[in-house]
Image (tube, rainbow, N blue to C red; front, side, top):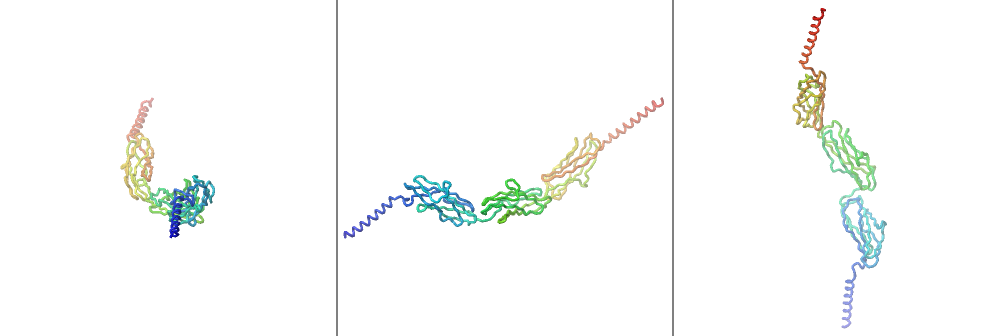
Length: 384
């Protein structure tokens, strides 16, 4: 009986001593190392490099040494551990003197969108779980993208597009830039404000490209496609731009008969009928009439402004030309202009100035007076 109680008592004491031992031992007694970084979950795009700053903290009272490695890294991913500018495999840490470690993880270009997990391990002492969220599907190719693929304007406009060329390959690429514009169209590529026909792009980086498009003279109203391609011997990408021509703008100033000449007596007025024609394919608005005249001449228009003139239509305007009262006989040029915000036309009129009949009769009277005077002198003094 005593033997049985002795055995039971021995067993109880053993359990109590074990529990007490566990209670007083520190949680880091087995390892003594803590790995710490504030950024344990990061979102990136394919091809990016992640740089972690990690602290190794010695929680014990003695120097600790450990081997460091990354475990569970997905296939195709690469990493590098460094400290103090050196590649790192093992590290020693003194108590209360944390050491900094840099961990660079390279996410591959060709990767599926999703969440990836791995860990930095201090062998036999600690581990640091890390999470990387890849936010988009990775590709091993070239991309040419734009946020504004279409524009519209009139036939005399120029169009400026912006595109981004992204090299998702693992090598530096030299891309040739070409455009398949319709015949007569002019397409220019610019990088950093310089005209180019090719561009270098480093791996997993981008280049912004300005694309300037000018339509040919006389282009018709409609929609036009401008395919653009960036290509090397091994990879290429293309994008399509659209230009919508709303119409051409042109105006012609003449007369109903096409005659650009008239005559006027000095100091008098002459009305000339003008014909303004919209020869473009889009409506014109706010067409103003003006004139450039000789000194002291005046030209007024009725009406002075044409509010709207539809494509292919004509309208008549009366120009009242008033010559200078002191103008001598001869030919003069009066320039008249019809000007809309988008187009203008100028016509030069030859105006022949005739002297007033009053001056003509005065000239006749002066001549008769001279003849009469000569006759009187001849009669009076001729016989002597």
